[in-house]
Amino acid sequence: MPLDEFEPIVRPAEPLAPHTWFQLGGPAEYYAEPRDVAQLARLVERCQQEDLPVRILGGGSNVLVRDEGVPGVVVRLPESGFGQIEVRGRRVVAGGGAKLGHVISTAVREGLAGLETLVGIPGTIGGALHGNAGSRGGDIGQWAERATVLTRTGEVAERGRDELVFAYRQSSLDELVILAAEFELEHDDPEQLTKRMQQQWIVKKSAQPLAHQSAGCIFKNPRGMSAGLLIDQAGLKGTRVGGAEVSDRHANFIVAEPGATTNDVLRLIELVRSRVADRLGMELELEIEIW
Image (tube, rainbow, N blue to C red; front, side, top):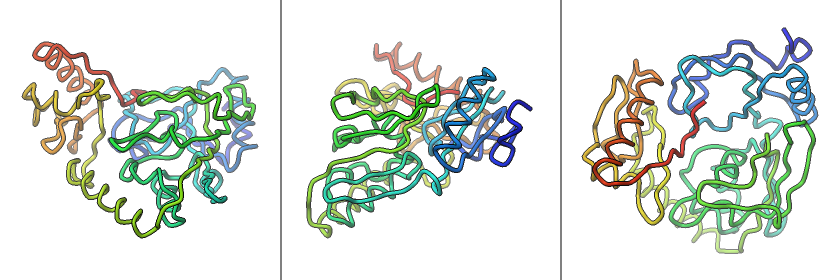
């Protein structure tokens, strides 16, 4: 095996379905959970030498894995080595593997406002920054002051605010790994913040598929419009292909029933796109990543 020296942290043919919200898809050729930045950097360098592609898996909420699986190495950053959260005055510093929800609740507890509008968005800080996660109240990029990244060649680099560019569901942070990020927030009353956060959470959860369902948000909202509303207007709520169904609670979610395959989801995505284009003249763009 080309990665023998990393045997304690690398597993061959690891099923990826349990690591994603959809709970679908085939295995990774190799799956790795490095303990710290130094080990991660060595692994990335080795993969380069062996010509093995590397992908980073965050919380798995924005990824759909193909049934045939993923070639190369899929790396997940464990919270133990990459999930630290630190508060310094108005600044919150968080590791790329920290859960977004943990960072939000830490900020709110410390009386720091800004991130609470993102409550209920799943995933890690690294994934949230890479895709500039957001809601109606704003996005994560507007609060980011600095990011520490690992390049595809295995070098650690800093990106200051003047180098960071954020747009709707995208960012200039397309390096291999976001190792850590620093956010500058605003002082506010912790009690008021907690109330606002709880209200946001209740509203968000009431409009999404039930917690036990394997599901994912599929399309970006076209400028000034709601993808879910367009799909609903096209009469597609409840539409099924195999074991995949457009959620009847929120049409921009696809729910994978037991026995569904990734292929079912992909065929349903194509059906939704073509119907919305035919009936409403709108081209829907994917928000989810397909591996």
